[in-house]
Image (cartoon, rainbow, N blue to C red; front, side, top):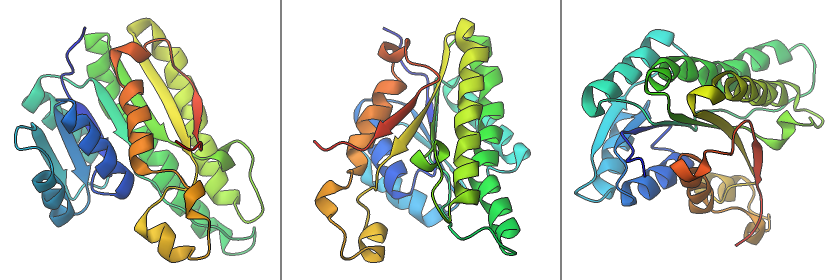
Length: 235
């Protein structure tokens, strides 16, 4: 069984990123934890097992190709390669198609689609050289079918889906897989505050998604690629 060289987790200090990082650290995976916030990254590392091997990469604007390239180079320098990329960076905004949509469109395309593209470009040469890799992006159900007031957000997530499908087909001969997760409403403090009357029991726990992602970046998931996987069920 292949021992992981390292997995990069972007947005590592966020709710989902933290769950993924904690899960992988518990499995002995070497980690590169990437986030914009230095203090949050430091707190995350403090919460991990003392034996965890973690490189932090703070203050990162991953829409910038030079920054993403530096991230990949730091991973290789520290751990000798990159087995996986789990990209949780993204944003959410809604509104009707009107005079304000262009700004929202640019924001969503940058946070969701461009970051997915730029981070993929950064890690793929390393994975190609090793003839092995796992890429997981976070998409969303509106990327399959948009609802009212979702034009910019849905379009950006659709772009993530199409990007992932293309990567999967282009690199399957190199044993590189690429998949998307389509989460339901994730049970986070922010979502609870924003939707105080919602039925929280129907929401998905971050660790449940983290377990799914841990499988997708494992050697056992070699036959799963180009998929958009709903993560909406209950345990």
